[in-house]
Length: 70
Image (cartoon, rainbow, N blue to C red; front, side, top):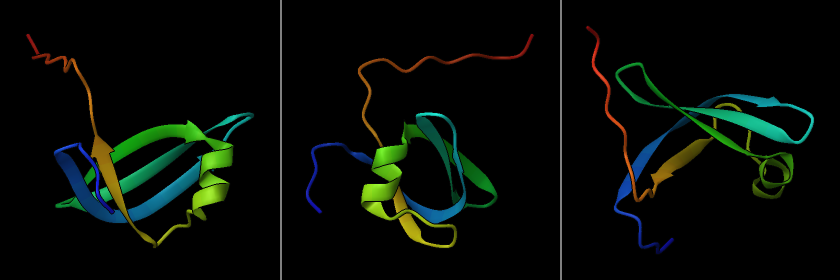
């Protein structure tokens, strides 16, 4: 897999929840840190995503927001 994104986080799928058209895929990337992605149900099916499968969270964004608690 060759991609231009530099933020590639390897992990394991711990949950796939399909909705009407969109699915939420949770990937545990280590130390109980979980990244959740919203993708189409069609993408889940095309990639054959399943709980327990190794996967990569690939983050490519032009803007990243940061917040802190008061």
